[in-house]
Image (cartoon, rainbow, N blue to C red):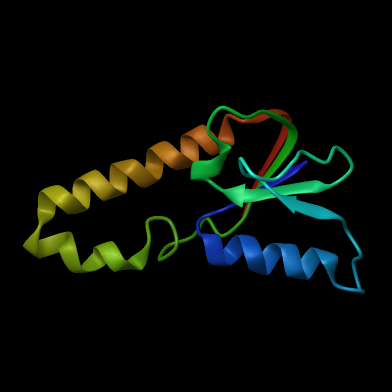
Amino acid sequence: MAVGVPSRDAVTQVAVTLADEQYGIRACEIGRDVPPETDAVRIGTLHGFKGLEFQRVFLAGVSEGLMPHQRIESCRHDQAERYRQEEQRSRSLLFVAATRARDELVIT
């Protein structure tokens, strides 16, 4: 299983939450420097999901202000083309992450 989130900060937050005594779930971060642990939940940014595949994928934080990030709102009127490009980039990342699931996909 893998959990995809929009930002690096969210990766850390999810990892800490899962490892908490209340849940006790083993988790490891998706990345080049981290060896894959088959018995751990893999956590990464949506960008980090490119080229990977998992039986189950849970995409968290897919909400306004996080996808696309609220920082691009300032571009909406002043830099309309940049805003459109950033919005399209967010859609593409979400699509790539969603298509990494073989059997089950949950988006929240």
